[in-house]
Image (cartoon, rainbow, N blue to C red; front, side, top):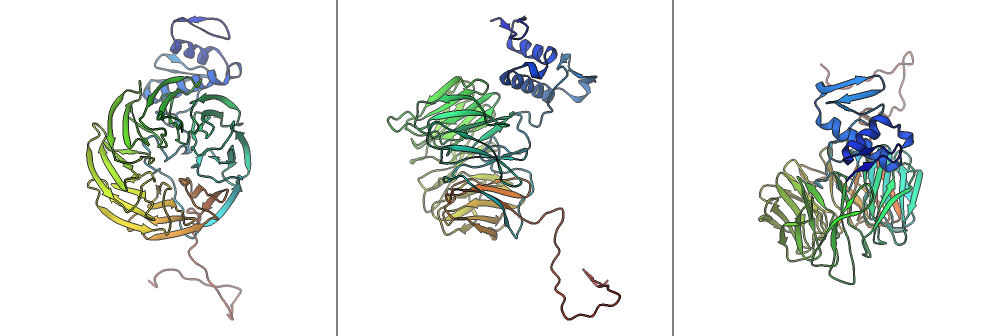
Length: 465
């Protein structure tokens, strides 16, 4: 099919050649938002796969492997998805590991700011380039300044609210809504790029965006047709859908090595081909799977309402091990350094060995734990129905700190740069921070009834040697 440039009517035999032409022969100001993103994505992917020695940088342009990128380009930060700096999606990454390389929050913790939505906040925040993106059950999604919590913009859905958690990729916020739509929203100004109507009532699943495709689940209360959708990230057109045997796919997909892993209310965990949606395998847990799979080192870790945490072989879906808790497991596992961290409705957070599922420790929060853990810098951060955010030591599960909100916490904490961002059923989004790791406080010295000579006080810290 012949492609034609909308700006100069030059014909091209394929889409790739057209995008290369847009990059080389047109300025960004000439292009539509969608065409600008196509060029930026093309430039990022080209840079990601070309060795440094093949780059030739000239005045106002760049040539890579014989491909002229023109006088503008964007540096890549991730070869898969191009995510900018931050906690950019549900459970941190495409594998849903719930962990990221950043500075955690040490004790004593304090509230940096809170933002009233108003409406309970079960959505997990995404934090990208100094902005917090989060949904609320009051019909709005918000963009907040990460430093002070001030509102940058808001976006209103057609109706209902946002239980889905946003994914921020290439300057676009992708999120599902309880009005049954999936939205693509400009991250800078909150304007709508497109919306996709699933025909369902709710989309509480959170999107994963890979290679220009959005993967997400949906809910329909009238029939057993809960689906997983693949949607074109540029224009919102449907690429494929997969129908499960239940009316709800609450689980948020993990996408690893060309396979989509997701749970369903029909009791199954599915592995689907990311390209065409065909089923690779499924595993029957015996109860609803609202937990979102984490995929690490060839193993799928996921919870079920049959009270178990499962480890499944990512290749064929066979069971590696299972661990039984005393209640439903709706929490989504986080996996870091050979340990699975997951909550249960039996009020506990568990640490399990990834290899054999043996229990390393458990912590009693005093309330159900449907929030999904975040693991950063040797600490597990998780919310509970006891209204608290808990910070636990990864080694032994001892509590480092807790912070009390005014309501139950379903939201998955996001951790970035010495700050925990989390929503609560008390209608607020919180930013919690600890001591500045670059300016530590050694201690406090109280001096009373002392005599000073020459207005000087000598303080010795350490050994006498």
